[in-house]
Image (cartoon, rainbow, N blue to C red; front, side, top):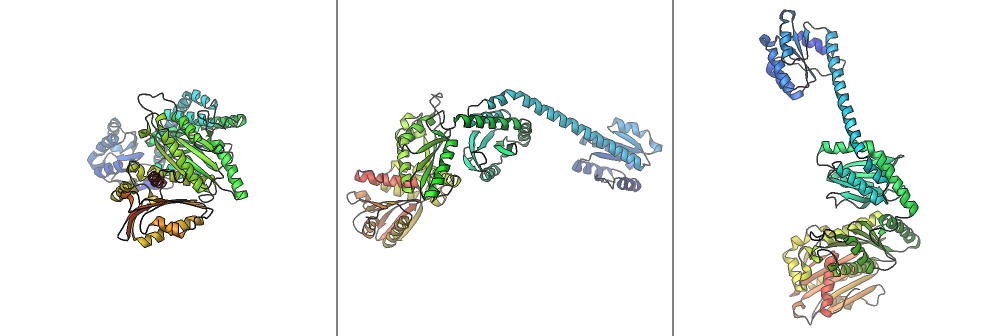
Length: 573
């Protein structure tokens, strides 16, 4: 309130002391205006006699500052003519001094009731607007129930939310009844980095980092869908969340109906768009493979394959590239291997009875097949981006979530390979080494611990390092080694002389570089083990070695390819 009368201020304060209302007092015009501007009160009591009737000016200024504030003018019986003037300037009412506690309570109560009525009207209008929006989506909601598969249904859900205003949408469904793992079945917007398969905590962590709103659809106390939404602005996303509060139960019911129909018809086994299996079937088969591997001490591997290949402007109706990718992958793997299509350009490959070295051989074979068939794809090889990573059981993980996490990480490493970033696949072995040494910082971007590292060692220490790497790899099981040899001390010569190549699980290929003048000082070593890949390339001079080594598979593949070209044979196949 704005008054110079301490008695009136104390009366108002005592009357409202037992309520949740906060009372502030200003003694002059400037203080009253500044407090009203800073706090935006619900009700202001203004003494019109303040400052030789300057209270009328306060009424006028307060109304200009806030149209929602209730302003009550206080005037004595000797100045009742000021009341109509205050009402004309925007006052909500006039109270005659001296005040009583009942008048104060009635006035505050009437303002409170009016505000509650106003809020209720706003709330009802909001509910009506949401209900009207939900009604407009009734046909789309019916379409969800008629979908042929959970993927189809989830794509329709994503489309519905996109039409409702969401810029980015990711739809996750559980992999099975009671499962803690979720699979991404549809997405809208630039959300390529969202996990395609993960546990709920990983999904929620990714959503929090990306600023996504998470909406959980529940049916019979069971979570049946996770929706990740981003609409750019707070009010926009809140309107979508409000809409889901109305239609969420219908969407959840539709998804459950589609899942039941899909399971009963066994339509979930094959992806109707390609010859690959569906992700749901892949999860089921991999679960059985994990059980067998644990029970009988077996091993297996799986791989993730990501293919980015935009359609050309000249031919926007070109065939689905995923179908061509699936055909090429199936042509390069065994009949017992299981290929599943997870997303438009993402595939998972299960390799039963396969260890780490076999998985890396399969990876090279698939990559070679895809790149060799790139002329079949729209845009050609310059527009196709392939990233593939492998993981093995039990070395890399004991469940599907762990294995996929490792495989996806290795696929991401191959996506950032210096071979692609620096164009090393167009260079000879000496040129590869020089490019890496000169552009090491650029080559290491985005790779973390797998990035190439430069070393400079006496040749004797370098030989010891190489032997230690090979011996450590042999401890993990099957190991394949490719190394170069030339006149004088060399890594390949030390490996050939120190290791017993008749070991059952060790395969060694030594490439003689003496006949190649440009490569006579090069030292090249590639080790493929059950738990990973190691490569080294350097140049020896004056008893010292200056080299780079890395745990990056695409670089290792290129070094093996270049060594094989020198001796006209295919190594490690």
